[in-house]
Length: 531
Image 1 (spheres, rainbow, N blue to C red):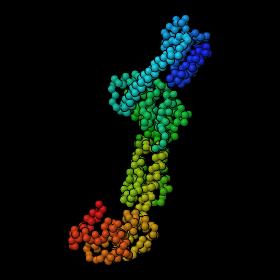
Image 2: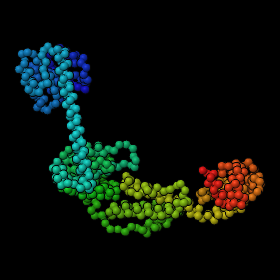
Image 3: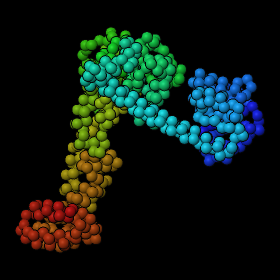
Image 4: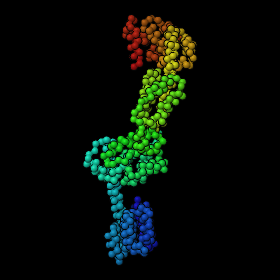
């Protein structure tokens, strides 16, 4: 799209030129008009205009003066000049000033269209070249930043490259701070990162020559002018309601200090978890932290002694005490990391004991292995507490189940002795003096299958033995294994073995004979039937 400005002190000429322009097959965005060079200059200052079609002779400011003034103000615009035969000398001067052509009065439609189309092609070519140059420049800049980022993160740097790169921003690299920004986001929070918005605020605070972006992800890292007060940038972020924690190193000198600065700023970033109330973390905030400690194993053991009890409140209090901020803020962040690992390791040991009992349920201990996966220390402690309370509940149920294991063993013995009689869950739970619903739940958790399924499998196991080892009729075997009717027995047998009882007996005898080993053959038939 192109914007055109028509400048002439005669209204009929302005209107005529605008009418002709609208008839041309051009992608015109807007056609402006002015009666003098002064009015035209004001329009050029206010709007993006690509082409000016102007008369040379006008009152106040003529076309030549307009061209000279826009050139002085560095307003990028092309000109077509309108002149009469007597103004040819002015037209030559206009060409010297950069006019793309001139049109003789009265202006002919075809001459105007040809000139405008020619200028428009030049503009498009120039714009295309400009875009290509911008892309090349951007790619070159991205390559430079990538090399800087790799060098910052520990890649070896060639001395020649270091010197050349340092000279490109000599003033900044002479004294800079490394700045890491951690956005306060929840895990998996939807929405785009605002790192580019934060970066634009940084350029506003430090200026284009006082700030270089070295990394966008996983955290925004900038090299910024050390002469600027370190509190100004965090204050600007707060004003713009950007929720981010800022970590700033002490002033660094020279590009060769960049890898060490990166290590320092990451250390500050990790310590920001200990000081969630500080919006800007500086080296002075952590320099007095204690570097030696002993983990509170006695308190840890006392906490885990509560596991499997109804003391969830005391467990919550124990976690709060272990991770109290007054304790954590005394030591280097490694203390907190070691404490987290110790708690998770003890949870793993307890989980290992009851894992067979838990079935498909499990704790999510993998999510607790890295403190820095969380938005802050409070979020991590909350997640740790939730998993510990789940472990407590599982362990409590496990201990209850263990206490009742003798009752369950007695129930199983009772089933095996009485499978041939009418038997149901109520009869067995009464035999061991347990609540019906509780016994049903515990039976399934410990045995791995429900009471009805277990009783069916016991009866069918006895039936397979009788079919393979005796000559009893199937109707006789039906009552011998506790089924009330021939139909219910054959249906249950077919559902499990995928064949009728008669087929099973024939298959066994055909393969192994009447005196074959039932246990081996029965196992083979079961394997065959499940294929």
